[in-house]
Image (cartoon, rainbow, N blue to C red):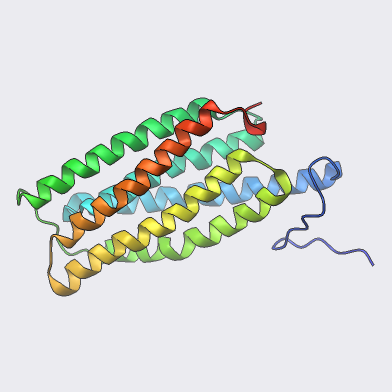
Length: 219
């Protein structure tokens, strides 16, 4: 009996070397569609997060929105990798540097909030976008990991890891905003932002390190 292909399932018995040209083309289109969906979502996520962070002085939302911009770049790089057969080493280095800069800005903004120069305000819109990200990003990460198993793409693997990390960051930032909104504890917001810094630095280090390593995606 011949197994019928299914969009939501991946048959890991086939490898990029043994797959037929039609199967490879189908997988490429799946990756392209998934990355386009990721880019659309990251534009919405970054725009709403950063816009709301500006109005509510939320450092946690600023950190999350800044990371969303970096993930937007990552998704665009993977899209170019499979659409135009480009390498992503230089973009990975740029993304890593931007993440390190973002960590510094988050730390600075958090200190400003702690010193009382700015006080984070309650933001229902911010809570909404973080809750949506906490649901959407794990699903995107699962879809990408399924495709990694059959494409052996280091670029896609890194992008899947960033999508998963985005979900963790969303929950941490959400905790800070909820404590501020429910209990009126304004310092919970910058505390949540500071908790995101190690994750941002780790993501930046991985991006810079991957740009220096030879891999199939950089050939």
